[in-house]
Image 1 (tube, rainbow, N blue to C red):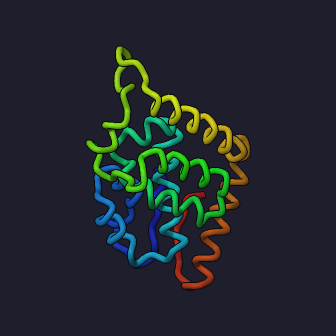
Image 2: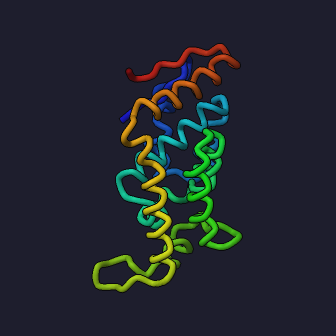
Length: 170
């Protein structure tokens, strides 16, 4: 896993993306408060990558990490990933005007939680959006250099403003 670390920060605070599935939105936002906006965006994009690419959008929203979905949607918009942001926003809207960060409230929308339970209309629509999201992301999947360049550009912009030192994997 990638470790995001800013010079001068304690090593136990460097694992924001790995802590996200376990932490509340308030705690994650508090732990990211000292980071610049671009780095916070990268952290949420990393959370999405770790939990969406592996499980799909339907499962992402079913799991606990989806409590961070509003912040992830904002990160997609900030990163300029318009197609992905639009689809993610469409998925968020399926939960109604007040997105349920509480896992029990969110899971109640789904019926396809086991193989012997038929899907409901919500599941079907979410799976359609998930497929569209996966297709939109293929431009980065088939071209990891494009995603890497986008991330590096965001890092550059953040460092340019703050003048900080950041260690990143090659």
